[in-house]
Length: 212
Image (tube, rainbow, N blue to C red; front, side):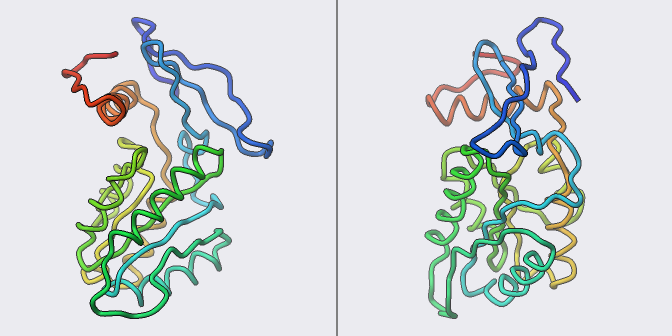
């Protein structure tokens, strides 16, 4: 689905190969003269997509993380566990989640199809920590609709889940919906994500409908 370009502020460029892997492609969108690279996988539904999944948690989600890591590995995904490696009831989540978020950004920048999953008691703090990493759009999901919309509308690349709020089967449903859904590429969503990125990069706040 290509953004509608009534004023030619948005235009799709040719697909380009990313990195050295010819199977990984990116779509180049030019928005108001600025180039935005979106992995092609973001623009389609990928129920059976195999990708790299970065996981992180704290003590509250450790058991669920281990079960999810096994499930995702069995499904064929390349799972990277950013910790913790042992149960510590007093451990702190920020470092684990930040490292996972950094790895997602680094992978996507190099053309690797990657997403992140951060777990905690509620998922709130983990989402906040992940969102401090430039280039991360972490969404707290608690039902299928929020998982799908996080990807379709916000191009979220990290999913936060409360391990004390959901059992294993429900967490799997949320994660599979998140992974399976692609970014819509609709003009309004591209514009809004661009506005967030502009603030992240420059500190300048754009008004509604404004481009840069």
